[in-house]
Length: 153
Image 1 (tube, helix red, strand yellow):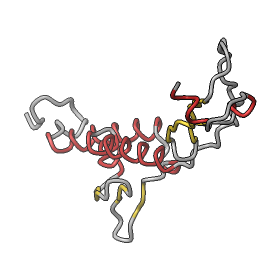
Image 2 (cartoon, helix red, strand yellow):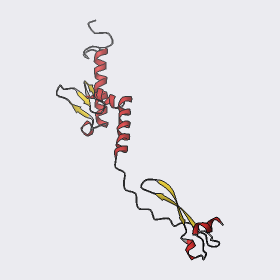
Image 3 (cartoon, rainbow, N blue to C red):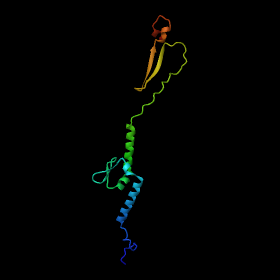
Image 4 (cartoon, rainbow, N blue to C red):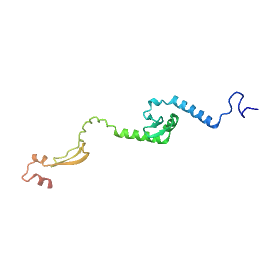
């Protein structure tokens, strides 16, 4: 019996574990290249030494299959998420359309007040303020004392 154990006549012998692993990796690489086009990957780069680099993670890879496995890994996915968040934050905000000015509420007025209080909001500085107008409404009232004295009565 000059045949190797487990092989058929003329087949060249049983495959070693190393050759099986090489064949498996090659099949996986071809399958991955069918689904993912490395020419369109913005982070894939071949350096002058013949190895491959991920420009996002700054990692070196010996072959395309190793790079493709890296793209599915945790570090690459986290770096993609970080980059997307940073680009979303740095993107210029679109100008908001001018909102129509809201008219003040209509309130029932009884009598003639001697003062007016108005709430104000400055949209540029985001500050709120109160405007007190004293004496403007008192000018039509007759009296000999000052306008502020009328408020005290």
